[in-house]
Image 1: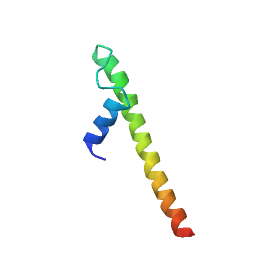
Image 2: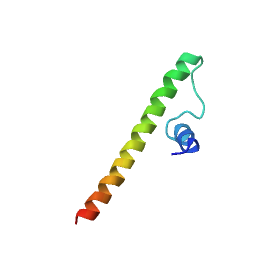
Image 3: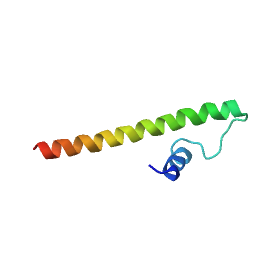
Image 4: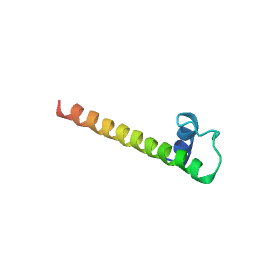
Length: 59
């Protein structure tokens, strides 16, 4: 996963293209959950790819 992918996801899906709040603490409060959710989606995709490979080879 490249940093461009993460930032692109955060801007389009995570709604971080333009923050609606001011202040470092508030922006940080939006960025951290957005990055965590991006990472969880990435883990899920990796797991599903590995699972599909395992099911294809066991048949």
